Image 1: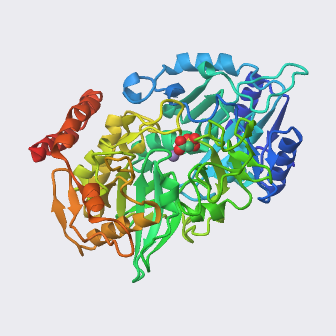
Image 2: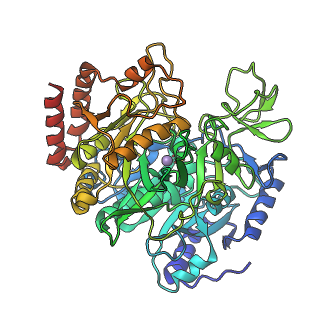
Image 3: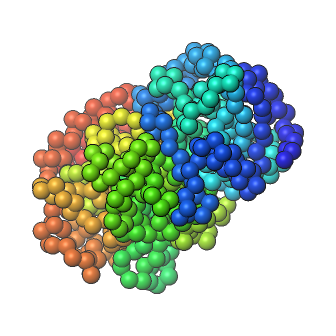
Length: 595
Ligand code: SAT
Ligand code: MN
């Protein structure tokens, strides 16, 4: 497999990185099936990949127990001035950060192969796509990138001799001395992990982790952090949003983009199968949306990814049948449990628990074990094309026109099932103040309430005050063609700790109400927080839910909302003079409405 690199900048960069990191060999990837199989063969031989008898061409990997999720505390937006990174990002001055990281990279690939991975975010050759080149010393990264992005030698052809690309440098940070045996999941200790972004020069440097968003640099690093900064400069949007197409019984299509934090059900909603008759849902993307204003003046969205990197625990035929059917073959599983008959298993899967399994740490597990068999952030990596409800237009370069934006999070209390915001500015306020309980997608405490504006707190590549302003600017440009904005909370619990709303396929009932609002078919009640459905307007036919539960789900306790105000003020105050006046105005109006 001889791939020649003609791009001058790329050749120079490959040479520089090789001189710095001192790999034993260099391999330029072409993205072919043979290459994938060859990589898998090597991973099987070294015992890193575990074949799954029950799922053709599927493999299980177990990470090091210290390397199981994104590391937000070690993620940096490195701009010349700290102010440009803003108060929600970690910042180190670029010169200093590069010096530290250059020291770490020195010889970091010794004993390993350095892979050069040419990839496209978005269909290859499309005007909205971006080309990245990831250099990595992890074969696990190579095979995951094959699924999650479009890896191809065609990307190199497209680059020609002087095309532009986004350099993404990755090392697991575990050089091997002469004769030293490798570990199953090489990585560096937490204090040496750095996930660094230099948005002023569209550059990504990642060191020390081999897991998910820390290592598959096309995803959060390129398609969100770097892309959000580019989008701000160029007048488009890069958002942490799923994209779906909903078709009503009359055949009318609605496109919905929804922002929820990591591990809050984006994949489930993106592939949801409506429980209401005659409605159809198709998936366009489950994590990231790039949106531009089209010639029709509307906002058009594409999914820049090529696969799903979804949370496994909790995924089942009852919660997400379309995901389960996506996972039948050609899947990489990470940190799931292994059953005795050679399949994967995780908590929340259908059917009986296995009486014995090997847990994600490689130990015997039985239902009596005190720890879970799969890690809470165990993941599947699966090709999007395998999803039975992937929309036929999911790769259309012009994207799909967005009708509805949804924001939300995990809130045990306070926030009702759904409300519509009064207008764009109020919608931006609801996105900017979105709060959610933390999940296992990041290393750190789980279940703490935090403000996670637009579900972008960990992914905004510049000052978030400016990001809010950018949302207002986009709204001004879109005018009457702007999507309507709603807020949802699928996770409200009753006083005895039970979920009030069944969720999953029944979320279609809430989406139907949104479509009817867009059509002007249903009214709504004005409340201090927004427009709530009139009783009876959410289609509950065929659903066994009590009136009391519905009332509790929709209830608004003014005192609880008043109690949120100091926290919102606090949250806003950190942005100083970067906080748009329009958000301050929204907060004042909100306080007045609460009385
Ligand atoms: O590890 S990832 O960042 O890719 C998954 C997530 O947190 O959404
Ligand atoms: Mn995500």
